[in-house]
Image (cartoon, rainbow, N blue to C red; front, top):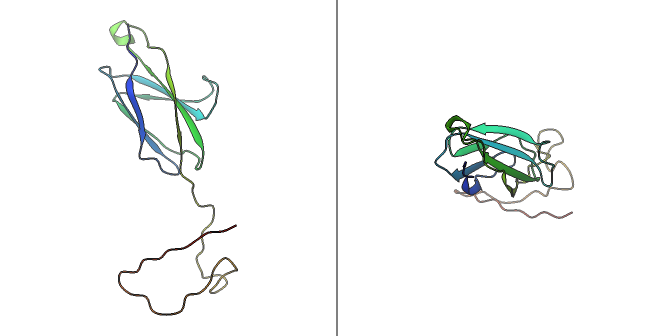
Length: 130
């Protein structure tokens, strides 16, 4: 029989990527990823030949489901059942940036100008409100 991978984990999550790792003695795997709740067979299928895989080009601030299946066909043992879903969320990615060159400073009402001098090292903090 083909044993499913175990200890599946998602790490190094960013706004557009994430790394998957797992434990197995096998060397070929199928991974399927899609938005949370997707129907298996409609997601993106990736293959791996080690016990890790990097997902890229993901949308930010999105919940994702991942399934994994071990492929033991080379040893005549077929494939394992799909394991999962393993769910994670990509980080929020900013949808705007401000270069401060277009309208001067402050560029609009979102910003206020600080008065004084900046020391070394400088730590900038801020708050956000809607």
